[in-house]
Amino acid sequence: MPDQFIFAMEVTLNGLMTGVMYALVALGFVLIYKASGIFNYSQGVLALFAAMTLVGIQEGRVPFSHLINAIFGTEVHHMPWNSVPGFLAILLTVVVMIALAWAIQRFVFSHLVGQEPIILFMATIGLAYFLEGTADLMWGSEIRTLDVGLPQGINTAIDETTYGWFGYGFFIDNLDIVATLVAAVLVAALVAFAQYTKQGRAMRAVADDHQAALSVGVSLNFVWILVWSLAGIVALVAGIMWGSKSGVQFSLSLIALKALPVLMLGGFTSIPGAIVGGLIIGVGEALFEFLVGPMIGGATQNWFAYVLALLFLVFRPQGLFGEKIIERV
Image 1 (spheres, one colour):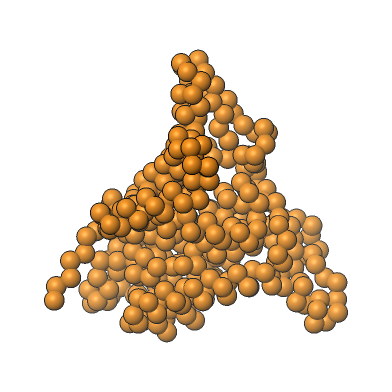
Image 2 (spheres, rainbow, N blue to C red):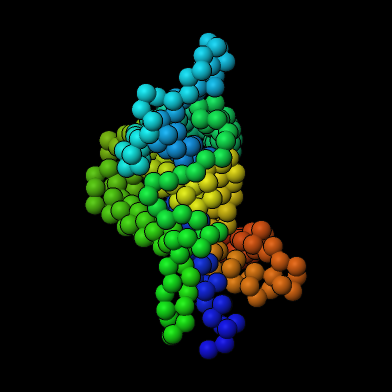
């Protein structure tokens, strides 16, 4: 088997794994858009905020320590305990993200019910910058290492597993394997929650028709808090995976930009579509860079996804799994 083909297969496999990471971010967008019609620009910052909060809790840092020290002239940086176990830190971060979801709904979007979609979108832009600034004040802007027991780093030879296929070896980052398994479990859990629980059925009812859901006694406020909480938990999972891969830093919020083409391919209202769109983008980026990149100078991964998304907008604007909306006039 030619070496070129072997390398292409390895590139494809790594592209699939990267696509799963993109899909994890896109899931949060889908959850909020499907239930409320809000395109949540702040989803990437939610992943950043969740990852920074997790690291801060795990390291036993005092929130807003820089601000407290500047005002009171103190030198307080850490709690009496030096660190928190990874699993407990994750649970505490989940509580923080649920509290944040309640605050977002209570103090922002409950006052914007009935507003035009562009107003709601602008509110999420403001929310993104607010959360980014809050994360900076709470935990500082230093690049930190996130370690919750997952295998680390695609850029090193450590923790890589070699799989034999047709007598040839492939190198796959263990973190990508974990991300794939987590994404599969997460999607299955979300689908089961939506299909088989009372709260999930309420969420689907609100997604289908707000007024009809209200008429049968569904609380919109509760459903939207639930949806933002789920999006926050999904953001935490994405933040853990991306933070473990590349460190927790403010550029982590930019992963939301890669989720946009994923949504355009899979559809803004489809959970399976987010996964399929992520896989298509991941594999497409990797293969295009491998096959075409050397001929045009490389760096095609920076723009390939957006060109593909543009083609979908022209020929199939609802995406592969999205619903085609027909407005009657």
